[in-house]
Length: 196
Image (cartoon, rainbow, N blue to C red; front, side, top):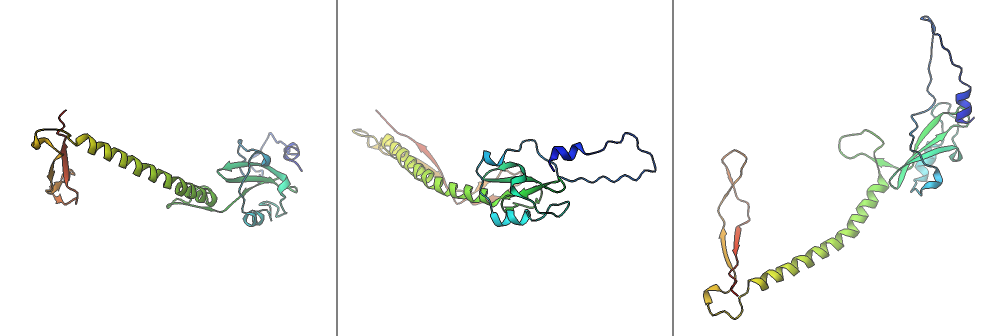
């Protein structure tokens, strides 16, 4: 039974009396409007996890089939697939992979494990390149600073090199309270003494 045929067979009653016993049974979950067909994307699927969910329809307990998929809501490398039951026409939401929740919030379907693993791997891959560029940049500008501070061919011995003053006293924190703490880092002020 298709979803269209299911809705066309519903009888509409316009008058309801106070003593009528009305039972409403919802046969499907909310179906998002932004579903895409299965062939639209490639997904990374946990087959065992998905097969376990395809065993039974939520309404009539009949077996669900993958070819009755209404569509997929992509969420990164995985997603949520909506499958229509061939017996009752109800739509069941199938999660395509294992998920986890970060923090204390357990709302929603969670974050897919495959998305977290892919992001961590990419971070590791890109992180090495970023660290190398940061070290190269630091080395380059440190050399520029040293070269810029050297006084070559000057007659005045007092102006050679780099003039530095340090202050290693206790620092006051600006939280409104008067207490001291040692930061472990001295403050260094740099005064270039370049003469050209």
